[in-house]
Image (tube, rainbow, N blue to C red):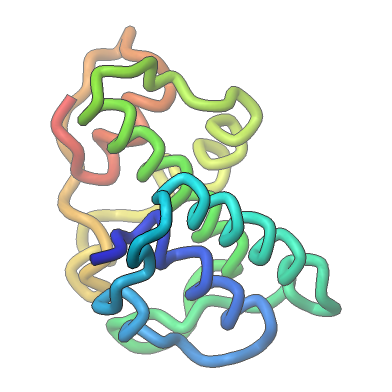
Length: 148
């Protein structure tokens, strides 16, 4: 079955083009007999094109818990950065992330999404501790419930 980093791209293509959230994408096999990296690369190309459609960067995110949340592009960036950290951590790779992407995600999210809001959306777990000297992306990951 496709996981969030793979299903996330077609999900955000729909949202960037003004469609509604389709959570069924996350329950579908997005990979089949293809190579996961190829599927992700095509999805990344498609979603980058979708972000270039008129108004895409101004659209807000319909939240699973109801109401409207941050700009869709901001949430997509956060998810891409966090899932990149997840994959790097799980596979023992460098998890510092792209400095510009990490900086943008930190600026938009770190300290701005309290635990009580997470309960309503169901999108992230409660914050976990991180050492003060932890790399920026590790601190962001801990803020969104990952164990460092």
